[in-house]
Image (cartoon, rainbow, N blue to C red; front, side, top):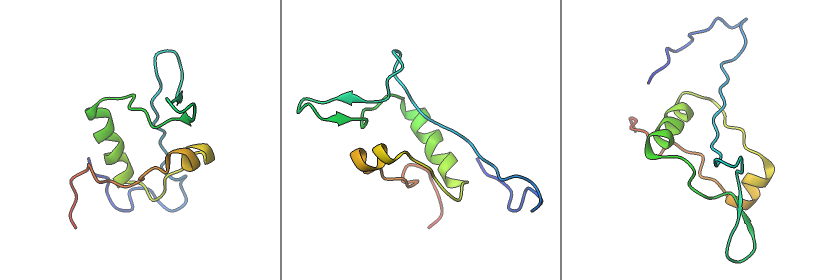
Length: 85
């Protein structure tokens, strides 16, 4: 999974993608045992998680919602994607 450098001319729109996971009933968060709202629940498999890290590796920015950031403190890195250091 690689993207060519400068693949788009500068006068074109930026490359944007969306990825998310949700349960079969359409929920993206649960109430945990301490009655606190948490969206830190694994909803997808290993392959999907790896793809998400691959997508992160070719983007310049990641956008998350304020509640996700506040509640989950997500690690928005590419730790699962093989890359050169």
